[in-house]
Length: 113
Image 1 (cartoon, rainbow, N blue to C red):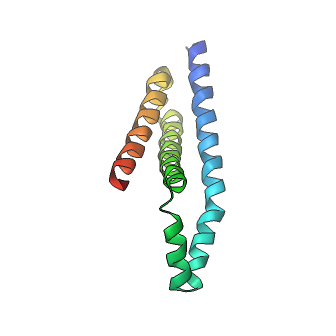
Image 2: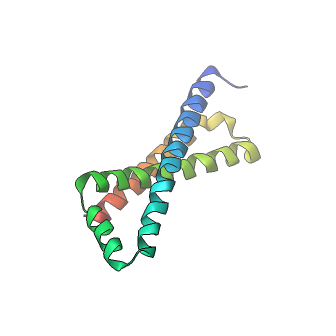
């Protein structure tokens, strides 16, 4: 039997999955812009890389890596729910996805320092 709390956790998971997907969709044109600078020569690419040492850019990179991990984990959660039918453990699955994504983001942050 599906309890009302399953709907709440499912809604939160769906919302987080969509928001992280939007963040990745916003990042994609910026990524193509960075790749385009490589075609214009090494000097332009070096100038672009110098821009990435800014604190705001580093923070955005951390957010992007965390969003990517969250999007991946919640996407795998959907696959598990559809194939294995673990509807009873929705809260623990969502919590595990968020915790794992934050752990990956923290590891990225520690590696960047």
